[in-house]
Length: 204
Image 1 (cartoon, helix red, strand yellow):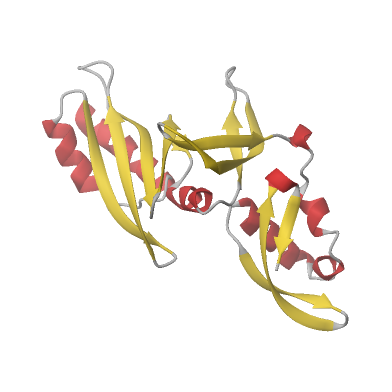
Image 2: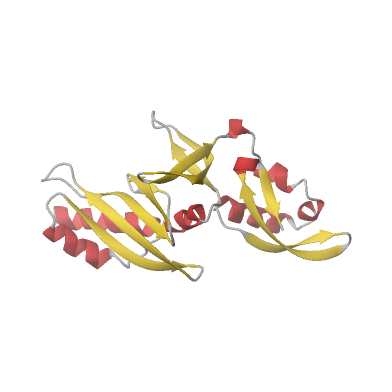
């Protein structure tokens, strides 16, 4: 296998991890053959029925080296944000959609020293810059404990343990979830999503 085939193979793995499947594989292969040091690829898609646009950026610092995916700009209606990709990892397509909707994602991050840690990330849609919006990061020390907040609601605690775990996982992914909680002896359909900025879980 030649160098270009190896390069294309690991880029395809990165694209798959980020939620693009194999939709862009052939397009990226063609662009790699024509480009010298950088290229970008557009990808129109949908999220929950809403039209969304992604622009992916590829670059190689050494003309004789490999191309790397350095970031993708996600556009949802009038909102746009550039998410950096490092070594094939970063905010996925689905996570980016949730962030542009104003929700938060519980994500594994890497510090300057390379150490991995988990924290909530959320875009401040009221504060934009040249790349999009200000990214707020809420570490454990900030004081938002999703499980503890959920357990303040007796209806959540009364759910089956496996269902509670599923709900928590969905909220950590940045999504909202519609579920039934028991209130005054009756089941009530509610919508839930996490909001670390306000240290709460919205239940409406």
